[in-house]
Image (tube, rainbow, N blue to C red; front, top):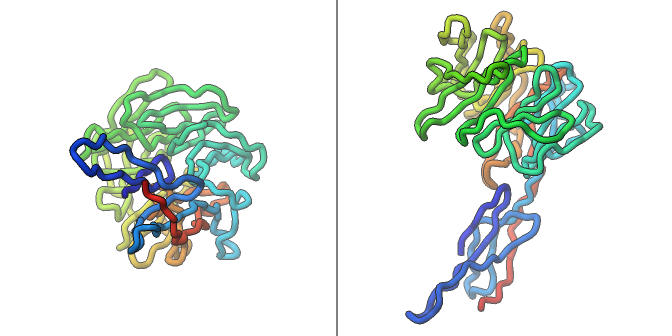
Length: 330
């Protein structure tokens, strides 16, 4: 008996054992189907049942209201993640949870439109609010926020985590030349020219903060690094370092703040104001249950930032129960 995973769900299978030299090769047989994912199977003592963990994945979008100091539903609490907002605050694009198809809507949740039929990652709305960039199978695409046929902008099967420059002319993205290295790249959308960001191996999650400045999490994941596009050099962002590692981070739609989550025994969310590097602790995340999409037993601390400056998360509202499956073996 074994588990298989396809996209966002797991199923249980079994492989009949051969009983003699002349027996034909056995084919795997599927035991489960439907909306639940099944994992951790254990047979009963008499072999007539299988006990397994059944998981229904569902998330609830919430944002932390700075005034009430509470997590409250956002976009009516839809099951979604990886939000990205237009600079004017009128549009939002996101991934449905857990199937990770790309959607867009007005920031009040109206005019919903599905942009892709397949599972994608890392959406980002362009500064002019007219296009959405996303990743699929290691390639990068751009699609109109009104839908239609996507345009391939990077086709190398090893690209990820892209971001628009504030003027919309350059895409910043990461590639993985091998399993041990990754590097940031520039793609000039006006000329098609592509170049590697010097010294970017070891940093992660770089974002534009100005047309001449990038900010990325450092190799130790306890601080941020700044890249000066003019001098082509990196430096440490000077702010009070935290003992806990940075788990995820994002930029506010107005490019003024970095929001980041920390792990460790006292996880939380904070933000840094780029004008003076002032750090503000927003709230604890110790009792917050993040929705999982990477695997049934995993969790994602991805943070987005709404136009009003409130951090947005996907809270886990799924279920896990133990099921007894009656099996009639051949």
